[in-house]
Each structure stands twice: as structure tokens, then as C-alpha cells.
Amino acid sequence: MDIPISSRDFRCLQLACVALGLVAGSIIIGVSISKAAAAVGGIFIGAAGLGLLILAYPLLKSRFNLDHILPMIGSLRIHPQPGADHGEGRSSTNGNKEGARSSLSTVSRTLEKLKPGGRGTGEG
Image 1 (cartoon, rainbow, N blue to C red):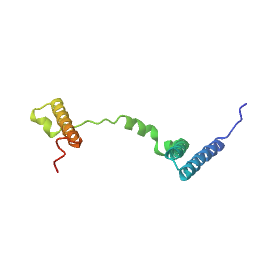
Image 2 (cartoon, rainbow, N blue to C red; image 1 turned 90 degrees about the vertical axis):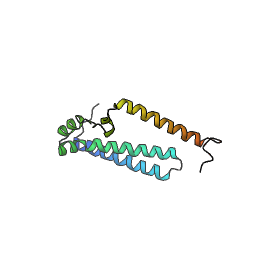
Image 3 (cartoon, rainbow, N blue to C red; image 1 turned 180 degrees about the vertical axis):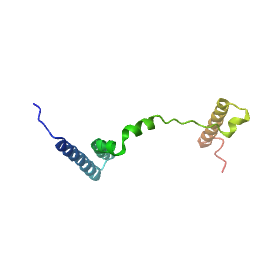
């Protein structure tokens, strides 16, 4: 049993669902005492935002010509430039390993200082 519906009625129904989601989410967040209830209200608001995006997508697609923009965004690549320390004859992999060891020893020293009765507790 298919009921024919015009695209205008369909858009109005979508907009009504978005508005209902925003209102319901706002009310749930407003009256909630617990964080879990507020999270449910946030889910309602997020779903309403997604519905609004779906509602506005045809307009955005025609207005900003997304068929040309999206492929350009997908083809962007980041090409890092070598830093100043890589030109000194040291390879980047050795520098990364040394840096990781250095930061690991720094973390170990910090953890030793934080332990009760550790060797660094007397320093001020």
C-alpha cells in the first residue's frame, strides 16, 4: 500500500522531524539530573543535526557545486619537508629511535619522582 507523497511534503516532514529532535533533546538536557540522561539528549540533538544536514544537502550540493570540490579534497596529500636535524648526516629513523628512548627515560624519571618514597620526593 504505497501512498504518493510530493517532495515538498517530504521536505516538510523531514524539517518537522529535525525540529522535534532539537526540541526533545533540549528538553531532555534541560530537565536531566544525571549525565546519562544528558547524553541521551545529546544523541537526540546529534540526530537532529544529521537530519538537518541530510535536509540541506541538495541545497548545499547545488549552491557550492560539491561534485567538483569533493574530489579535490580527496586528492590532497601532505608532503612533509625534512627538518634541520635530518641534514646533519643522521637518518630520520635513528633520530626517531633516539627521541623515543629519550622521551621514555624522561617518563620513567617522572614516574619515579611521583612514587611515594621514590628517589625524587625530597627535591623541591
